[in-house]
Length: 329
Ligand code: SF4
Image 1: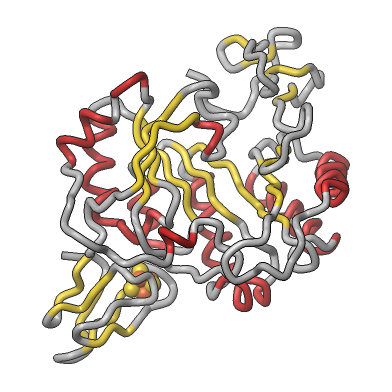
Image 2 (image 1 turned 135 degrees about the vertical axis):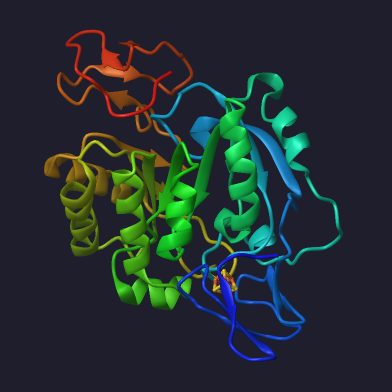
């Protein structure tokens, strides 16, 4: 059975897991497609349903300052509570639950330590709509010495988000744009709850990195990027890693061209001028765009262009001993 819902009347349930607050009639799903009203009870249909299971580099999440160089068992389920026109994982995000194959938590505990994995990343589709499984599995994974990572859109109500932050070691959280209009028109959600949840994660001590997919003409203007950066500096820290990722046409947004490299360079330069310390450019291969530099002396600490030799010791720059934001061992 799902958590965070209440019955409104004999036929109708109010789901209170995410800000949509879907009213779900008998025999129907909420917007996410995995929470279902069965005879007056909300069922979490995605519980333990993970059709996509891979062992990934942690950098693929992307997390560049969380145990770099490690691998993590990565699970993807189906459904999503946002309806992004540009979704790049739509085959999972727009699917419903089929079949009854459940990954039991005992099995997950074993697999989480296979082949050197540091733990489990809940990723690919939106993981938080499988709230109940992550809470049940996450607690046991932590007890078992495994890391718990979320790759999420951050669009959840405060109370369940706080629950998740109690078991997460790290999270990559999307900020998809920086206006209410963008969120309403392109994602079907709203910006405020996402920003509040990123701040909560940071203040609770969860290691966070932010992903911002740069879409030409929609969220790449100077004002939007500038306000986003100002928020990261004022409400979080200039050290929080930000991944500005290149857009490719996908799903219901085939009419917008890929992000020009010049746009990504302009944004990277703007971020550096404003004082952001850890800026990465993703979904495009360019020498040095994913390297980590010391935020004090500027020395290159981690090269991600193939040759793997971090110039760090105990989370500090080997040259000037400056402490670098992140989790290093
Ligand atoms: S979790 Fe799903 S059912 Fe619940 S409010 Fe959000 S979209 Fe609706």
